[in-house]
Image (cartoon, rainbow, N blue to C red; front, top):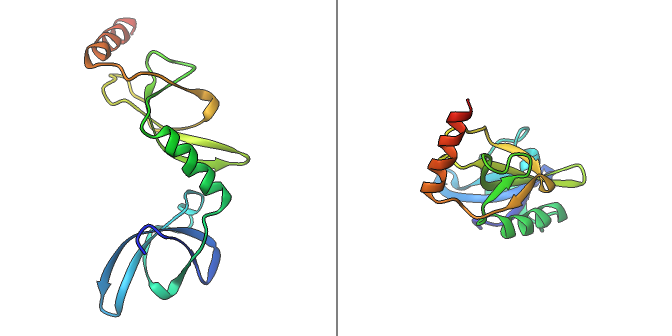
Amino acid sequence: MIGSYVRIVTSPEITGKIRAARFDKGGSVFLFHPDAQRADTFPETWLPESAFEECAPPKEVLIINDKLGNLLPKYFRMITDPHTRMGTIIGARFDGDCVRFLFRQDPRLAQTVHDVWLPETALEECTQPTDEQMAVINRKESQAD
């Protein structure tokens, strides 16, 4: 059950994954985590098993999972600022017809930006800098200010 893709029986358009299970007074309850596009309107919540049914992930989720599977362990830089905006991908979502990725900047950089959603075309894969290389980047940035 944990890790299964499900939909809410009373609202079949709301789909997501089961993240955890626990025993409650009335029996087992499961932590339902909605898909990213529904997270703002339907929060992560504990539900009884009768509230959902298993289903196949929508095509969009399969595409995102496939792209994330290829991108998550890798390191990227923003094409517009390749020397100071480097980090990893921590999520993905559909935005119209394109996939956007949630970019998290490397915390070793002195001047960081908040997590930002970017199209795939705004990122390029790169090698992760060493701590020494990061120190040089940070020094150059502080001298530029």
